[in-house]
Length: 226
Image 1: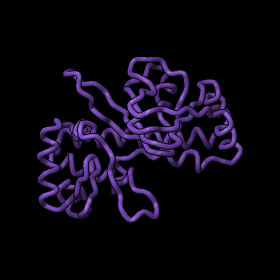
Image 2 (image 1 turned 45 degrees about the horizontal axis):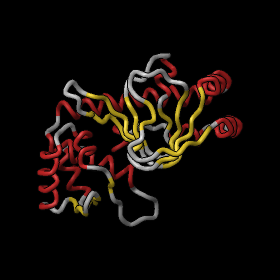
Image 3 (image 1 turned 180 degrees about the horizontal axis):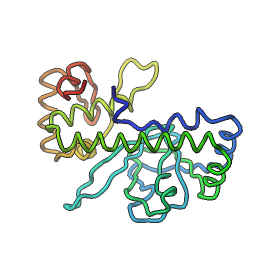
Image 4 (image 1 turned 30 degrees about the horizontal axis):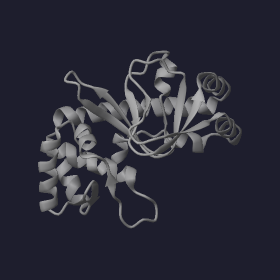
């Protein structure tokens, strides 16, 4: 169910023929980004694309009041920044590491080379772009049509999917309250009241910044998400 709100670029590398995958892995240059360190900023010209090896990265725009509106959070195994390269335009948003991350960089020249030489890569990228537009449309619809409670509940479900670790019994969401508020399109004070209500209803538990979902089905009902 949650796939309509998450990108699917994680499939690109794994579904490539071995020679194309080896080419990409060969030209990737790894860099470590500290928590809160920008990767690229809105309005700047792209010089390549990015692949998230580990960590998490937020993608956001600033509204007219100077507040962040988080559009998406990238997870391990996802490509990003390629739409601006393809459109030959400046970045339309800003990306920042929200935890210590290792990110691979692929230059425009290398990106264009595999794009021209590999029909598989072109097809997977087009598929990913099409899905990305659909995801963004779904997220914008949520922001404009759902209540704050519904938006917070839905974003907790999205984050639960991103933070879960295979073979781990419990999943902890580790995101600042300001980032969670920005994802849900609300202010921190309102978010705090909603989280307090969710705790009272035993939908979640909190320990500092950590949030654990205790009742996924209950949160789905609150999100009005079926």
